[in-house]
Length: 173
Length: 91
Image 1 (cartoon, rainbow over the protein chains, first blue to last red):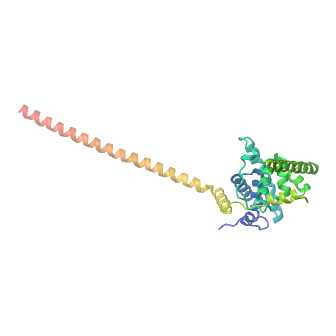
Image 2 (cartoon, rainbow over the protein chains, first blue to last red; image 1 turned 90 degrees about the horizontal axis):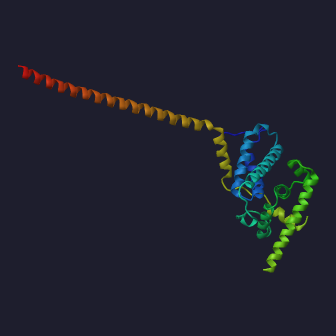
Image 3 (cartoon, each protein chain N blue to C red; image 1 turned 180 degrees about the horizontal axis):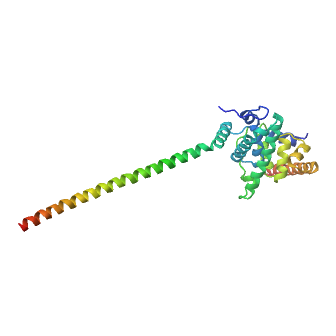
């Protein structure tokens, strides 16, 4: 069996194994489509394979893979924008391995995040999935830190409002 | 951190891709790495098709040659019969 190595000897299969959850989850939480997320994740690793010689360290690999995953997910989201739109209610929520304290709330939150506009959606995914701080997100998305912070604030306010509206709607029923 | 941030962290926790993902990535890499195999298969199919075409043409040529020989033999036999008849009439 062939083993493909980076400059520093990290092997390709090891990198796929280590980062598959990160790549798949960025695409899945951003696109809210598991099949599409797997396609995007495969493309990211094919791209990694093509660029393996440029990877200098494990940390460089992780940052490189995350950046490419973000770009590919955004590109795929834009392609999908040109196709027929779905409403929030149309977005399916398959069984998930997430550890949300309330599975219903977790599912609802993922759908609400999926309904955010593209830039704030990716910012929320990077903040709460990848635990990046606003400065790291700003660097990755090439925008000012203040813009990232304001997107985060607006997104949180919007999510709170939508949750409140849903819970009051459910209470009235 | 407030409750919504906590819940978002839980809801957006990393998940593994569907089973068999690593195998599918390996296959995709192998396919991309060895496109020559696909060209070889196509070339082999082309050679087989050309070879089969040539063989069929040769076969058709042999059949046509046999038919011409048969026609000539029949014509010669007819000519012999006519010649024999004419000789009989003249004598």
